[in-house]
Structures are given as structure tokens and as C-alpha cells.
Length: 282
Image (cartoon, rainbow, N blue to C red; front, side):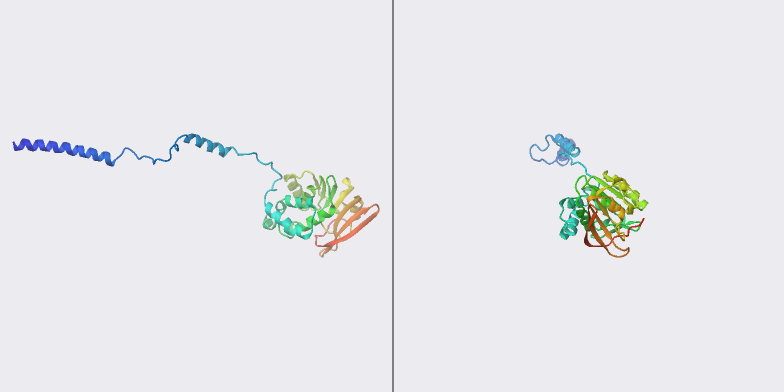
């Protein structure tokens, strides 16, 4: 009797333990974690939103602005400050000249080691013993020429091509000569790369000008002879203007404004300057 009762009790206890274990397992081990519930509708149409984001990444919201010459947008703020502080404050007023100085990327015309000084208020070496002129001097000399569209202008001393680029913003007939072959070639390549197709540049002795394209409405000389070259005067159109520094090499020179009136050459002393000397014929 006692033996049978214990057996039945043992079986009952075993069944009870199994049931308890099963219930406990369900309570502590759910089949998988559930994501927290968000606001109603957040999970709906999620795939459509992902596709919309992907399309926006590859399709710009509006048309792109047309590209200008390479480098025009680079360092534009520095050019703005250069014009405001170095040029306008010193009295250059021609709006077309100021616009050209703001537009042309001067840093594209200086050597890599001088990039940090590209918009500084002084000349910079460009190799072969030559320099790119101070921004104010470039602007002041350009303003004196009073260029208008269609004017034929001759530059003596291409250098890096910066002054020629400024002139090309004001007229589409720019001729420039450079006596140093290496500078003449590099300037031609640089101007072509930057899209200045209106500039004709050659390796020539600037003392003799470029008679094939004469007469000129304006001539600008960016190196200093010790006297005014007669070939340049001869290539100046009646009513034409010339801006030229004149003086002994190694010293300060005088910047002259010349205007041809028939056989007469009117002269005006503008200011003292310091340019590299003109080399070549005399």
C-alpha cells in the first residue's frame, strides 16, 4: 500500500515539474526580440522613401550654372579684397577695369611657391629674372589706356600673361610680345589653357613692337627702356594712347602717358614706378 502510493505521488510530481518548467521557459525565453513600436504609419512605405532619397542623390534639384574660364571661381573673395583695398581705395574708378581685376584668377599666373602671395600688394618673381606686376599698377596702367571693345592693343612684355588676360577682358584684339623664349612659350600655353583665345602672343623683341598688326589704338609697356622707342611711337594710331615706364635700369622710373595727335606726341608724367629693364634692340 505504501509502495504504490509513493509511486503514484512520484509520477504526479514529475508531471507537475515538467509543466512548471514548460511554463517558465515560455515566460523567460520569447521566440525573438520585438522592435519597439513607433508612431502609427512609420513603417509603412519605407521602401518608397528609400528610393526617393536615392533619386535625390543622383538628380540635382536645379540646373547648374555654366562653367567659366578655369580658376575664375577659385579664391574670388581674395580678389574682391584685393580690388577693394589695393585698387579702388587708391583711385582706380573704371568699372570695366575693376570687373576685369575681380575676374582674372591672378594665382594662375604665379609660380607654385608664391601661391600664398598671389593677391598680395607687391610684384612677384615669375622666373628668368622677370616679375608679375603689382595688382594696383596693372589696374592703373590699364585704366589709362581707356580701352573699348574692338580696340587693337599691343603689350610689350608678356611675362606670365596676366596683364594680357586683363586686357582681353576689355577688348578682343590683344597682341603681346615677349623677348624671353621660355616665358613666351609658357605664357602662350597658360593663356590657351585658360581660354583666352583673343590674345595673339609671340617671342619677339618688344623694342620694335609688332608692325604686322599696326597701327594700334593703345600700347602698354611692362618693362622700362631708358628712352621711348621710336618704333612704338610709329605703330601708334592717330589718337592712340601709350603707357610706358622710362628710366635707367636698376633705378626708379617715370610712368608716362602718351597720346598721339597727328605728328605731335602729348606727354603726361603719371607717377614713379619700378620695372625690370627692357632688353633687346636700341
